[in-house]
Image (tube, rainbow, N blue to C red; front, side, top):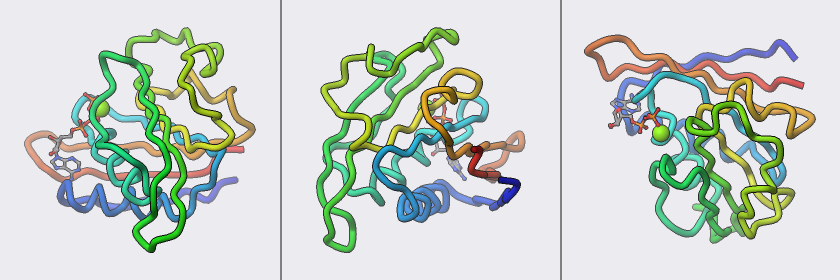
Amino acid sequence: MADQRQRVLATVDDTEAFGRELAATLRAGDLVVLDGPLGAGKTALTRGIAAGLGVVGRVSSPTFIIARAHKAGQRPDGTPGIALVHVDAYRLGGDLDELDALDLDTDLHHAVVVVEWGKGVVEHLAERHLRVQLTREPESDVRTAIWEWIE
Ligand SMILES: Nc1ncnc2c1ncn2[C@@H]1O[C@H](COP(=O)(O)OP(=O)(O)OP(=O)(O)O)[C@@H](O)[C@H]1O
Ligand SMILES: [Mg+2]
C-alpha cells in the first residue's frame, strides 16, 4: 500500500498529539514499528499512542527491560481501551524471533505492539505493520514523521 503520509511536528506536544491520532486508527493485534535516531521522539510518540489507546501506567523508555506491557484502561472518550506492549529492540541486535518469548503476560492479539528500533527486526511477526519514521534536524525541536501501512 503506497499511501505514505507526512507530518511536521514542531514540539513534543505535537508529537504526543499525533500519537493520540494514530491510536484512534489502531486495533488490537496491530504492530507499529518506530524508526528514527536517538532522541527522535519514538518514546514521546509512544506516550501519545498510549494515551489514545487508554492504557494504565506511564510510558517510559523500556531500554533496560526490552519490553513493558500496559494493561487496557479507558480511552479518552470513555470507551474501553486497548492494551499496549512497548518494546525497545535496540539491545536485541536483530535477534527477536518471537515476541512471545519475552513472556509479557499479555496476549499480543489483544494488544497494540509498538516497537522502537524495530525496523528490519520485527516486521515478520505480523501480516502488516504501521511504519513510522521520525527524522530530526540538528539543533531544532522540529521532527518530521512519515508513516505508512506496509502489507
Ligand atoms: N517535536 C518533538 N517531538 C518529540 N520530541 C521532542 C520534540 N521536540 C523536542 N523533543 C524532545 O526530544 C526528546 C525525544 O526523546 P524520546 O525519548 O522520545 O526519543 P527516542 O526516539 O525514544 O530516543 P531513543 O532512541 O533514545 O529511545 C525528548 O526529550 C523531547 O522532549
Ligand atoms: Mg525511546
